[in-house]
Length: 90
Image (tube, rainbow, N blue to C red):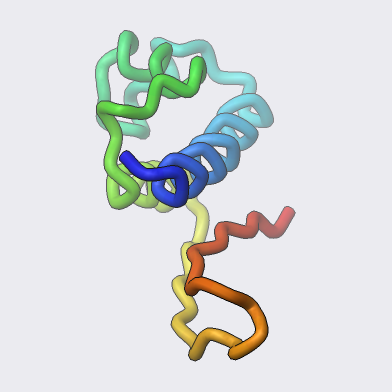
């Protein structure tokens, strides 16, 4: 996993974990809407993200009643290499 993918996964996991914290769900309770067993919820909460794809993390957000938007635009000439950015709106 490269640094860009790791950063994307971490930011998505942060958004999922913030939502779960706000819902005050125990790991067993959080497992149901996410469709994963409790040990995977523990891995998610502890940011052990190797077992989760970006797509899976996005599906967790939609399972928690969040809209996810992906915007594609040309890279600005002055910004260096193209990048992926994750922003959560609260």
